[in-house]
Image (cartoon, rainbow, N blue to C red):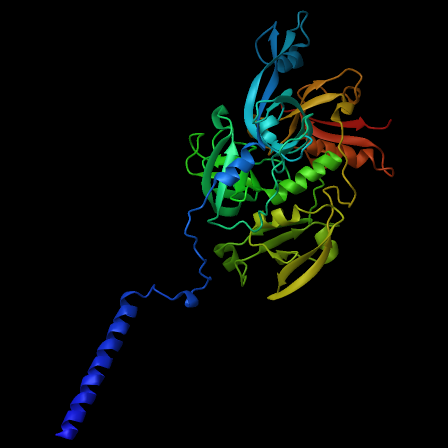
Length: 490
């Protein structure tokens, strides 16, 4: 009996243990997604009892964001009609009673800006003030000032303004590098002329390239958020919950022209470099590696038998460029800049864009499956390490504007700069350049903007060993290709 009771007890206990283990197993099988915090890939954050408070960040930023309004000069004319004046004059000569022109100023675009210093430096988007004849800045306290343009950078869509004011409220810079996806941010600006508007959202993505900039050497590495941004927010502040500036709101993804879910901001890491250069030199000191590159996708990796999808593939190395001199070769995969991992062209452009020509940086590449490090001395677009100076194109005796999309389509070109007027006895006039001429290249440099022309101008203006001549390649609206040599000697 004792043995029987003992056996029954053991059987009973074993049964309980089996049921317990079965239940535990069933729990795991039914809920495989449930894991303990210690087994998670990322450490669980300590959640606060109180919800996120945006009031401090809003109070910090509204007095640092300004309203930017512009005016533009428009030319009205009376006289002969028919085709455009330029074509009329080309085929029939200048008429006896030419058009009479009158230049009037009319309201232009409206946007936002962010105060950077107590003494009146303000950053905004270049597209907000581009081609403006006058710029008016209204502070949050309703004071109004006329702003001067210190410098612009179409490559990043940034412009630096200056107003004559004191004791302003600059917004402190935050760290856009450490901004995390899912982090709360505020967008502050003046949408639809509604001043001091604050909206909230989270960081949806980083290093976004949305192909909205057309300038050469463009840098697109936007912070994507779902904070509501509309026309008028351009140039305004993207701030974290500490009230620090982490970006400049620039664009929205929309088919209607109004906010439909996503907005994009220039990271403050880029903004800081650009405004510092504009303030110090009047023009951005753009450093280049001297390579042609492309992102790596699964198809490209398979076709080229690559062992990784991360990094940027070097498809070509420019002769006498910084990369080639350092030893980087075609087929290398750039994986890091200054030990910062880069997985896309946008990320690499953002990292390189922080440096100036002449700076030395460490570039890590993957070559034949092994990581190799190179010390690269960056160069400017002209192929040297010198400081690029701001050039006053008025010295050429002409005025310019980028060509329209229809003109690009007509000539089958990606860009160009149209000569909209030529002054008598100016350098362009002496060379024979006429109004309407479209500059496609200057000294073998592709020309898409006045900044490009300024670079080509400087290339010969300050070169003591070469004849100071600006060689232009271009065409007139009738399709005639014409070359000019503009003498830049004093």
